[in-house]
Image (cartoon, rainbow, N blue to C red; front, side, top):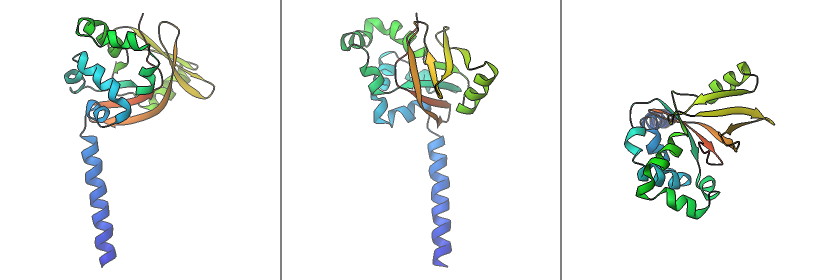
Length: 170
């Protein structure tokens, strides 16, 4: 009987923890992960937190702190200044597409597109998703690449895919 109670308690705890996790928006998920602290700082500086906590759904290609560290410190510092909010917003919305694009959707689109597909970002510009050397990459409009290193981090209003380099619009 004790084992049955333990099993039922464990299952109930898992179900409720999954439900609690699913209720977090993509911004809440980013805030709760130390690897996204620079992204969260940038979202706050660009006044995009509230927008990305909205209904969505959104697919976010989220750069890690290490990805932001690849940007020259002076350039990143300037982007975070209040007078550059519009430019920062354009950079950040270049990492977001409308809809809930799971990894399986990306793979299916790549098969249809023979290893390459363009998506329109919230900034209104194109981002190319491509398969190369068994990995999935983003190619920005400047010809720079970013590897998708983790996928399908779910929030209540979308999904996050982790990238290793900040992509930049033209």
